[in-house]
Length: 118
Length: 111
Image 1 (cartoon, rainbow over the protein chains, first blue to last red):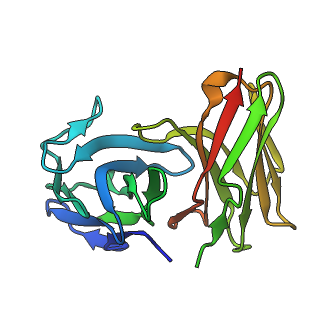
Image 2 (image 1 turned 60 degrees about the vertical axis):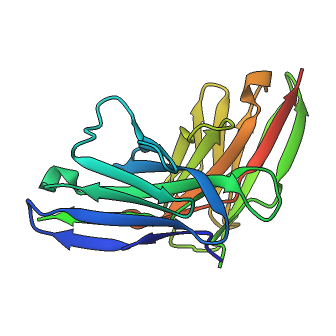
């Protein structure tokens, strides 16, 4: 079964509203979570890296005031797209890095959240 | 239900030889496939992709093969280099929909 969940899986919103996407590691503690954005037929673009209890590290070109990331606990990270515009429409994927079940550290991807801004 | 599977958690290959990483999927509707590479403590980086209209895509030392009838994807690295040692993930999607990821294969290239 899934080890990383994202909620919601789909969201449609009006331009100017804010949207929050949750990423949860279901049965392990994720010391680090990554947020990606996927453009059609293109690779995942890393947006930011978040460590529990500290500020996220954003990649160059990613507006930190527009894409707010909170990693409040070892199992939850949130991405808030503030004042969303149609160009923010995309597929957002998180991944969680940690040790699961006593195995070596690994990384699991969430299923993604499709955002459509009208 | 794991729709994308990488059945080999690890693989060791001698430097200069070919590395072959395998990936199987269950959903025949998948039409877009990706391979990612990940170093410890870093996020994955995109490696190569293939759409279902092709059966092969090549980029330098990396070639991805797609066998739609077998629902099988493979990544060939030739020649393998020590810097290729990393965890490799495959992913599949129906275009416009969510991605499904494999659990990764850890490749070690021995100098």
